[in-house]
Length: 298
Image (tube, rainbow, N blue to C red):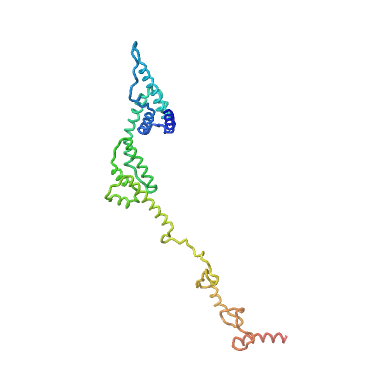
């Protein structure tokens, strides 16, 4: 029994400290701990009365009162140890465990009653966004719905399911429409499964569209990676387009001083100086002979 109490005390040390919020949850955990220690009875059972003056007290009555005092001390210590340092300083002067317990209930249960209004407002005004994961937002709504049960605020699950469906983001319009027209009523667990499947399918569709080229956008696939055929020397070379060349226009204005024809220069002339046939050739050779006769005559 002593080992069991020691183990429970060790586990209790790992529990979260009471910070002034969610008193009902903390109260249940604390009561469970005190019940395990068999000391929770001091919260409801008054302390055994002292004997009147001159009256003798039996040994059994003395032991009951001493046991109650010991259990009350244990309960008070566990309750104070389960609080934050700030709350410990506020409530540390309580005389008995019951006085401390009643003070906490009076203070924080009253505050919980006022917080119910904020819970209802948070649930009704919650709006899901396309920019966030729908599954995460659904879990946040479940957290608020769980607070309803903690404060004993009963809401029919079918109403909660319908409210969550209405809060789905705008891009889920078709999905929302299909859920509303189902004949079978959904539970929150089933709705969570539908949302996870739908979100995973949408994620896959987004991945597929990323690999496709949108109409009007240049393709990123290049043909340069293709293996070249060594027998095809012209493969991969760009064909020159028939662009007018300015040099052709200049050649039309040229006159060869050798054959006196238009369209080429001297170094492009095909006239053979040794051939006397043709008018152009005879004129060219006559001019050359005349010049040579002048040289000889000199």
